[in-house]
Length: 136
Image 1 (cartoon, rainbow, N blue to C red):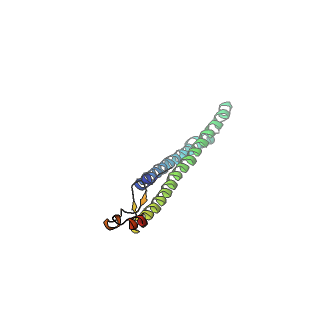
Image 2 (cartoon, rainbow, N blue to C red):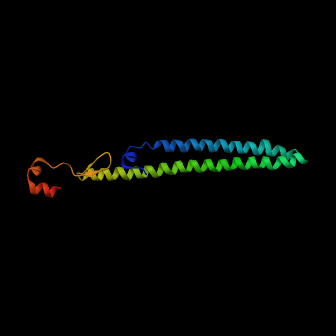
C-alpha cells in the first residue's frame, strides 16, 4: 500500500519510461516474429521439404513461432500494465495534491506524513482558557 509521503513525493515518469521501453521490446519481438515467418517458416514451406526429418522439424519450428507470438502478447501486456499504473498513480497524486491544497486553503496544516491539523493557536487564544478549549 502506498502511503501519503510515498505518493506525494513519487517520481511517476519512471512508469511511463518503463512502458515505452516495453513498447520497444514489443516492436523488436514483432520484427523477430515477422522474420521467423518469412526467413524460416516461409522458406521451409516453399522448399517442399518432405520426409521424416521434415515431419519432426515443422511442428518444432511452428512451436517457436507460437512462442514468439506469445512473447509479443506478454510484452504488450506488460507495457500496458506500466502505462495504466502510471496513469492511475498520476490521477491519485493529482487528487492528493488537490486535497492538500484545499486543506491548506482552509487554513489547515498538512505534514509530510499526511497528518492534517489546525495551525497552532495564536497568542491571545493560548492565554484565554475558554477560547483555547473551543479552538481545540
